[in-house]
Image (cartoon, rainbow, N blue to C red; front, side, top):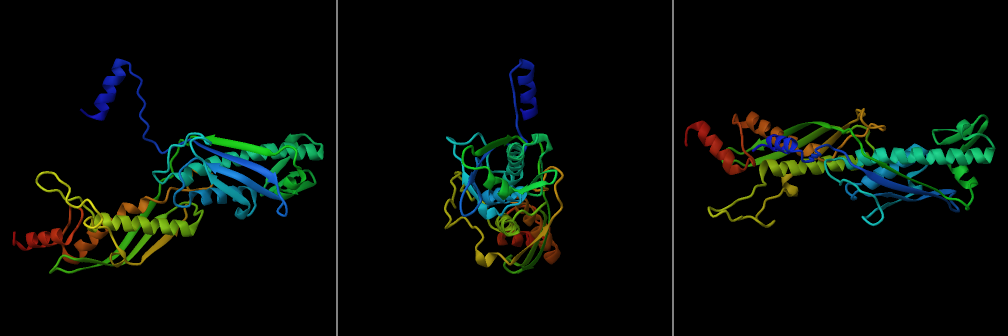
Length: 321
């Protein structure tokens, strides 16, 4: 029975059914603003409840710093846990920086609203007259930078804010991979000479992290394309259940991977961020298969494209099988 048929039966029975297949999540991030010498202001605890992978905590701190016009070094970040943070849907689907970044912006908006009210008290004006732009609070001719306002607030009442979002959009990414290969027709061995991965990453919050994500993803895709598979005997027993026998790419297998970042802002994110990490796992098998076809004239249709399978395809082409 298909999933669609099963859901239809449940619907007809009146059962409550909810299927969530979207890239969305709820995050909680808390910020505490505090006066500290010799630095005038420090965000003491910018907390995210998602799992920390691939530098997403730094990227969130960087987004927060950019929003307020302060150095990222003046923000201390921490990872939440199930006791101290709200629900988070998880770090998967290349979604964490994309989704959490929207919570960061909402947190910034909540803090700005409080700080505008505090600035209004300092200046004796209605809070509606206080604006915030590019790190500066202003009301008429009066202006205070973010740090100046934080220093003027004193110790009595800290500024505390939190934010939770459930994004209803996704941050799709796009990539084109180009590869040069050398194939030995006597052994079926494929040697990768050069690899170029061009990816639309949206706004590149941290280019070095992004290049590492692309290179790591390409390496995974190379393993998928050429080496990695489960091998079973006739009784269904797994024969290569350890890393001694399960062939993952090693340094000699992977060429220099040139990661080219193309920044086309995502319309689904206020900062234009897109998901990055997993996009480049997908293209390597297709790119390598096309390169093998260009080299030998055979079209591989099964993964991994191991030497044995390449030899069998050559023999089929030459009429040996």
